[in-house]
Image (cartoon, rainbow, N blue to C red; front, side):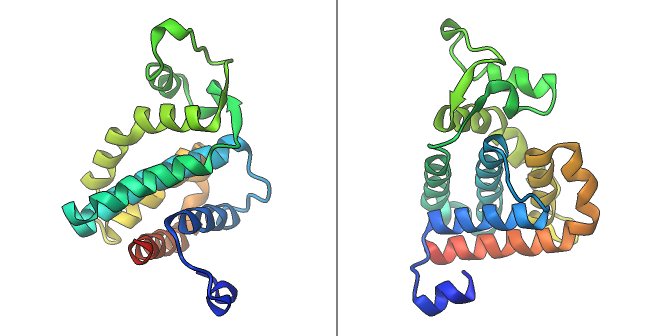
Length: 187
């Protein structure tokens, strides 16, 4: 929570923590006007990172909070719109996203989709794989938040995010650690 909002007594909520952290990530990476697809990816990957970190830190005690984070993250994406192809960085990832849709509705990469549909598709295409990937690297020097920031940058920005990460790594780890602490406070 920023100094101004704490002085004004703004109540910290899961949704406000998600929205504030998303803005902070874009500022950290120098993105002044993120596209709807970038905002959507930030919501999905922050939700997944939160699930991995909170499960690592709190285990079963935080299951309800993890569910709230996913629900509130999806809610933030309601006004967004994009093409299905904008959800993926490569053809393999696009195929995973397309596979989440029922075959009978004929979704293609050029289908226009709203934020909630896009959130569900990308989240379900990536959540298990990404959480397992984060957990498999949690014994590094910065723990779960350290690897989660790598996944977050690659998920939102693709190769460009990975290229910028070396100089952003410690600030990104700080932001994700602070993000998890604020979520716990908001619970």
